[in-house]
Length: 188
Image 1 (cartoon, rainbow, N blue to C red):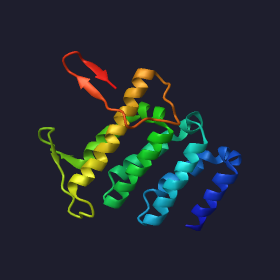
Image 2: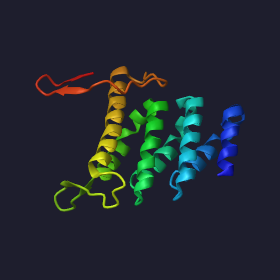
Image 3: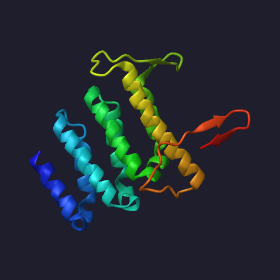
Image 4: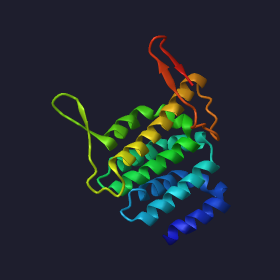
């Protein structure tokens, strides 16, 4: 925890010197998101959010696959607390790096489904899963996951319509997205 707090001070006050070791920093913080202890995970999420808000998506892009790998590991983790915290990482990535999320969305979508349902091997059908730990209700958990899925889909749609020009600092998550089957158009 002390190392994470020192890292926070360095990020907040000396960001310019970090760009040389940005890959190591991102890898270390992303790895801590899978920690079994809650406090290091929370602190890492805060630090990543500060870091991602301080650098451009072009600077982070070479390391984005690392972030996505740890995100996907968190989303499919056996511990539900780590799964919950992985949604917070996704929130931060959508907020600060929406164009990169839009580009890598296909690899993340399947993990969304795995968070709330399981696949039947024989027919490819899916079945809603039950969380027996129940710190939160199954419905609340599904709503949390689906809210993030909606946010991600909105980001992807904005990216598709605006090309690569998503406003990195303001992804409006309150828009409603509707698909009209008759005319095959998407209304935002």
